[in-house]
Each structure stands twice: as C-alpha cells, then as structure tokens.
Length: 510
Image (cartoon, rainbow, N blue to C red; front, side):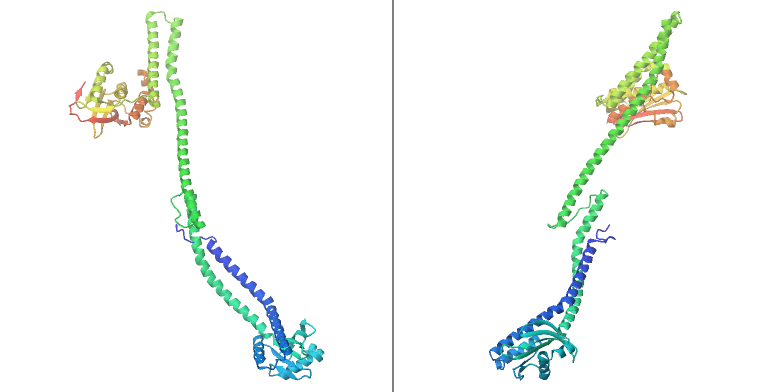
C-alpha cells in the first residue's frame, strides 16, 4: 500500500489549508470592516489635525508679520499643496491679505456668511461642528454648488485678521474606497500565494506523519517489519524513533507471549493427554486384571470349599491359579518396563553389535516355542551386519515381533525373518502367514492394551502391551518402525543405524 496515497478522511494537510484560508478570509473581512467603519474617521481626524497645524503656522506668520514675504510664500504653497486646502485671510477692513484659490470671491462670501449669516449656512450647508474654540470653529459643511462635503475652519487670528481654511472630504472617501479595493486584491493574492506555500509546507509536514500512520496501522496487524526512516531532532523524527523502538519492544514481547502461550498450550495438551492416558490405563489394567483375579478367586474358593476332593481336580485348580498368576506377573512386568520407557527413566546404551548374531541366538533360545507352534522359520540375512543401538532393547523388540508372529500363524505357518542393508540403515522384518490385520486396526496397534483378536490373545495370554513397548523403544532410539499387510499374512519391521558393510549369505532355514 502506498503510504503517500491521500486517504479519504480530512487530512492534516487539508486541515492546514482550510484553517489558513478561513483565517485569511476572516482577517481580510476584519480589515475591510475596520476600513469601512474607522478609516474615514481616521482620515478625517488627520485632516482636522492638518488644518489645525496649518492654522497654527498661519497664525504665527501673521504675528510675525511675514505673511506677504517671499520666504513665507514658499511655505504657504507647500502647506496648501500638502494638505489640499484652500485658504483666505482678510484684514479688519475685509480686504484680502492672502488667498490660495482663484475663486477668492467665493471664499470671501463663505467667510462672511460664517461670521454674519449663520442662518443661511445652517439652511444651505447643514454644518456639523467638530471643534470649537474662542478663536476658531471647525465644521463639516456641504458645498451646495457641487454637492461635496468640506472641512472648514474659520475664525480670527491673533493679529485680528479673519481666516477661512477648507479642504474637500471627497479625497478621504475616495482614499477609503481605494484602500478597500487594494486590501481586497492584495488579500486575495496573499490567500492564493499563502495557500500554495502552505500546501508545500503542509505536505512536508504531513508526509512523515502519514508514514507514521501507516506504520502504526501495520503494527495493529502485528506487522513490525516497517520502520520509520528519518533524521533530525524535529518532533516527528523523535516520534518516529520512539515508534521504531516501540515496534521492536512489541515484537519481542509478542514473540515471548506467543512462545509462552505455545508452551502453555503444550503443557495443557500434555496434561490432558496424561490425564486421558491415566484414565485409559486404569480402565485397561482393571479390565485386564479382572478376569485372572476372578479365576484365581473362584478356583481358590473351590479348593477351600472342597468342590472336588480328588487329587487330579485339585491339581487342575492349582495349575489354573498358577497360570493366571503368571499372566498377571508378566503383564505387571511389561507395564513397569513400558512405564520406564515412556517416562524416559530407562537409559539407552548405544553400542555396536552384530544384529544377525542377536537374531540367531534368540531363535535358538525360542526353539521350543517354534516346535510347539509348528512354525517353519526362515532367516534371510548376510553373514554379519553391524548396527548402532541398545542391544538389550533391540532384542526386546524382535522378541515381541517374533512371538506375535508365532501366536498369529495360520495357513502354511511360515515365519520369514529378513535383515537387509540400506544406504544408512538396516531393516529387520518379521513376516508370518495368516489373516491380514483389518485396515481400521492398523493405526491402533501401537496403543496400550489394544487387541485385534481378543479371543486369541486370551488364549495365549496376550496383554496388548508388547507393541506399545516396541513403539516406546523405537522412539527412544529415534528410528522408524511399522507394519505391512499382505494377502497371505502380515509383516512387522523396524530399522537401525548401520555400522559397516558385510558380505551376502544365501537363505538359511532353521
């Protein structure tokens, strides 16, 4: 996902631009409002001060009797031009002492009206007095000829001369309008330029923030690979470094939590499995011991009560009791052996030995069992085959395979024992003719107390523990084992680590 892709939400960049534009519009409106409300008054105040300052200079010149000098003429022109005023000064006999306007007659008449014809002034020009002292009066009047307002100041100078100073207000109003237009145009230009500059700056500010937002979003999905890349000491860079540190801490913490959770889950599963195995074990042991205990109890009670007094019957009862006790003793020993193997308390002694010799020695010791079962045993193996394993435990595995084969013989009653070398292992297999194991039972063969044919197991005293011991031994040796069904029989096999090469020997029949 592109971290710089503009999201649908109102971004910081958009917020900056919106706030800036809104602020500039508000400031522009505020300036326009202030200009419209107070700029005219401010200009008028400045105009009044300008006229008053001109009056002070004219009054001082009159006192000094320099009104008609060449030096004052220059000052006179500069003041009139600077403040845009028309001035007329009359002496006590109403003669013009000095005038700045070509229309001196109108100014004389206006001055005379101010002194001697106030009613006409008030009627035609609607004066509004803004300042009034003993020596002068300042007022705003409307010129009926042109319909323009003027600021007028009239009165008597200290030397007794009459004066009239007037300045049009149209310049003030026009200045206000010009100022407002300029403010509007310049404000729009500032808004546009400011928006462009702000957009660039906001983009520079928002890009790292968007990176951080993307990183934090990935962190919510437990993706800690993304890291903030930036430098400097700005707040965003500091935040990015802190988020990187937070990401590493969270990743480490979550990893530890997952590990602890997995361990806890395994412990729970192990406990549940142990509890299930304990219940199953108690149930199976109770079931397996119930029959021999019942037989022993029944025949013992029969002996005690003298059900049969003849010697042959008593001997038969004793043989049954001894046989059932022997089966119970064998089962208990196997259970103890299996318990040690599954608990890991039994030591595995790895040694190099001749597997062929081990099989031959066992077959010789089992000759009586072979003859009793009427089995035809064949061994296919090389002269010597050396393996690495625990010799005692390997003999236990082979013994369980071989005795199972003898107990389940049928048909031709053939038992084939084969030892074959592979690249890194040696496979030993025991095949017996007979009925194949049902497919649904194959996966349960290695479970404790599981019996495919319970009637036959009971007949030869099988407890269903032998193959469980095989499983535990092979797991402790970390080697493979299994069973294969054939049309005419069943083959059990296991593998061991090969020690060295050996020569081939033809088939040998025992």
